[in-house]
Image 1 (cartoon, one colour):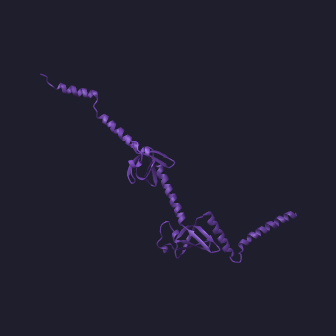
Image 2 (tube, rainbow, N blue to C red):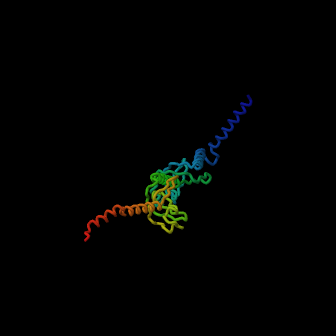
Image 3 (cartoon, rainbow, N blue to C red):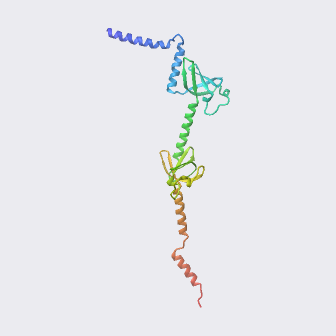
Length: 242
């Protein structure tokens, strides 16, 4: 019985001790302590917070988080350069806590990182969609973006880049991509692989197909032996021999 009473007293003492954190400490009142505790958690978790710009100050704007005055530097308001902060007054934006110091009453917020992340995610989604539409065997057009010893990277648009390996740049053996292409050059190539978001291209395949086509056309223009014999017979039959 005595043991149970001891346990209950210990539990009560612990609960009482924890409650002191919310009763102020002589310097900060209860509401302030609770507010900063929440703010520190927001910082730890990187939580996105909806706020309203409530004031304009030098080099930034003001917004409240849990009733605490937070500062958003002008450089962290947007991805793009902000000319006039007055245009932001009353705007609803989303921010993260990047610095929180109750002792110094310092709370710094930022919207820029959130916008950058969302912009990057949108670009990735756009790229994935564009890549998914590129079929093996199709012919694509692009601009040579850079040259490496092992091949040429081609910008296909929509943040999609394809690689033409050096062995796929020409019908002839070459030692450097610079021998056949240059940065900024427009090229056509055949898609020979689309795997894991990586696009492999070939100019060689197109050149080979073109050569085969030309050879077939040349062969089709050569008269058959029978046709030559018939033409010669017709010619001789038209001749009168004395």
